[in-house]
Image (tube, rainbow, N blue to C red):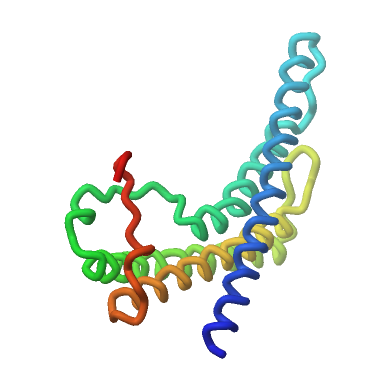
Length: 180
């Protein structure tokens, strides 16, 4: 029963992070077109007012909307020159340890994002030109970072299961060398 509930929660996490990453992709396209039209407008002496501040907001959102899915897929850059020489169990132990460090750092980042969003709300901070409220963007980034935390927890649990021998390590270790 615990296995099924974990699979359901893991599936929910995957779907939620994928959905947020797609929203981030729309943000990327919006930012691209905004920049394109701003550059064209500058060529004709009619730049888009506030395009830089909107681009900054979209960049922040793009990062946090996409990072959860990247974490879920284990898509972050990883230097594993040394670790690939160890057995799958030792690799899982090391992954568990580094996962715990990543979890602590990510929880701190999420906590600070919530604090920053709350401070922006309390002080009613806005952008300078268009006077867009900053707090909604802060809370979206903070909420999206929670999905990164849950993805790290999933990876730690999988690593611990391999490290303790409760899961077959054959699909845990994947070779990145072509032909292997």
